[in-house]
Amino acid sequence: MNERTPLSDCVSCGEPLLSQADQKALFKQQSCSKDDTLESINCRLVELRPGMVAALYGGNGRTLTQGRMQSNSRYVHFSCLMQDMAQAEVRNHRCQPDVGSGHIIFAPGEFFSARYGKDYISLDLMVEPEALADVAADDYDRIEPDIRQGFLVRQSVNNRQIMHAAHILASRLDHPRCQQLLLQSAALEFLGAHFSSLEGTQRSATLPQREQMRVMMARDRLLQDLSSPPTIQQLSLEVGLNQLKLKQGFKTLFGSSIYALFQKHRMEHARLLLRNHNVTEVAMTMGYSNISHFSAAYRKQFGILPKYDRH
Image 1 (spheres, rainbow, N blue to C red):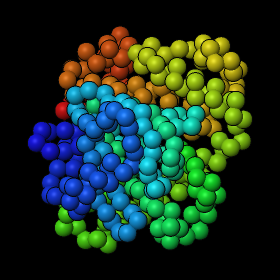
Image 2 (image 1 turned 90 degrees about the vertical axis):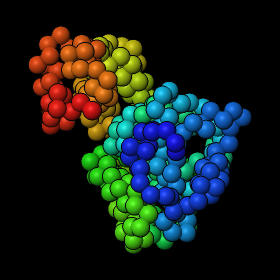
Image 3 (image 1 turned 60 degrees about the vertical axis):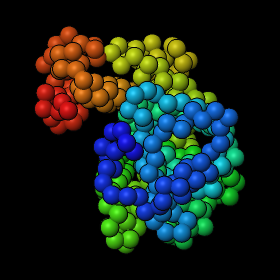
């Protein structure tokens, strides 16, 4: 890449283990679209072993990218959103992970729409079902029925473990001379983090589909304006779900209270704004009239005052 992008900030040294031509061919194999709206997404692909490829994707650093396409991928995708935002919708499943969490997706032949932030960075470990059965052993049995039926979407909610494993794998991908064994061990750790997170998603099966849809609607409404959240009562009325079920639904689907989820997204957006604005400007943009209250909330979220976190 000639110009500096968010992806080059994350993975900047050395040459990929796949040739540029092979990378482009593999990237194109994953989906097809009438318009090439996703051509601006930067990608770096590394084959770790037969049937297993790691990919780092990044936004163009200038504009939001969106498109609609059909999946041609033969892989099971284990993803982790590392920066900014990403949204995808496939077969009425909306995937909108928080930074540090991700999804497990297997949807060959399905049409999906996607949107990516300009500073988006995501790590994607792609594994063919046969190779996954080999490396995951008994854990594979937990998703095998869905894979056999040809469709799987599971949210990964164990954020800290997944993000930690993602950073280790991304850092090793950055060094072409890294031993193959170390690359594979990092990939297995990343896989293990995703399978561990499935324990937290089993609870969603106990939530009726109607309630799941209404809770997802409430989440979208909640995050619509990060400077001015609706009250729980307002959310409840708008989506047609009583307040108790709404609170329980957030705990079940997202492992978080309504306010904690909102505040997490609010502070992550504030962190992005701090790249180009001072603390006072960001606080006001995020709806804080008191700078000290903003600083306290920021430190609670990230363990550091915003003035020390400016890039």
